[in-house]
Length: 244
Image 1: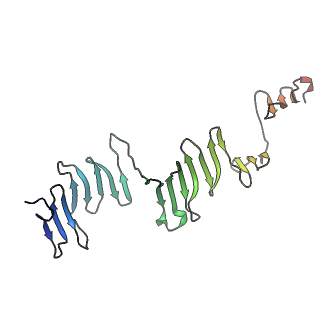
Image 2: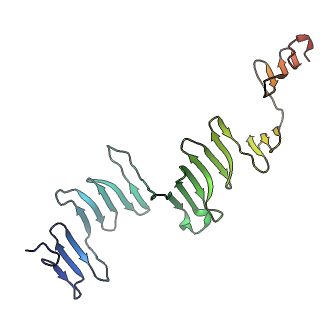
Image 3: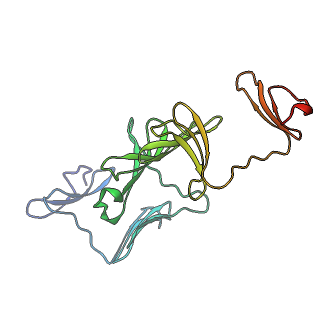
């Protein structure tokens, strides 16, 4: 017999549309026609030629299953799909962006027919991770996290909080950067771009400390006021007789 694809070929159809042959290295089922190649069976399995390991299973009116080394990793279901791991490894679902491109996972609720239905998780080429929404008709930030860097939180695409090496920052913005506590935002700390404020909107503002309370200048630490067991003292004065 010949090893060429032009000999020892099974040809089907008036236009030689379907061919089955072996070229000396590989085996082929080749559909050259305008229609589809259709494989039918109540249960269709694709298995390794040198073992009984299943590579793929197509179950009648049920799941399509994909296997790795004989272990099921993926299956379809009525509501979507399942991913499976095995006893020797974590279960991973990896999305690779091509060179210079982001990797996105988009989640569209309710058929995605409204902008507010659309969300996405994005690993960006700028080394940051984003949670974004499409409510306003374009992708806007809810959260940004940067490797070895800041985590940022947004409200209506405006950054409200970010972490840094020293703790957290409330970025300056129109209307002031505010930190609020209480169900009715009763306690507020604000910087309006010029001055800093501490507000208490309900009942008393109580500051407690078991030792002395001192108010000092930031530069040099010069003491301006001192509250101790004697009362209020001004400047660096510590004499009990001068306390209010």
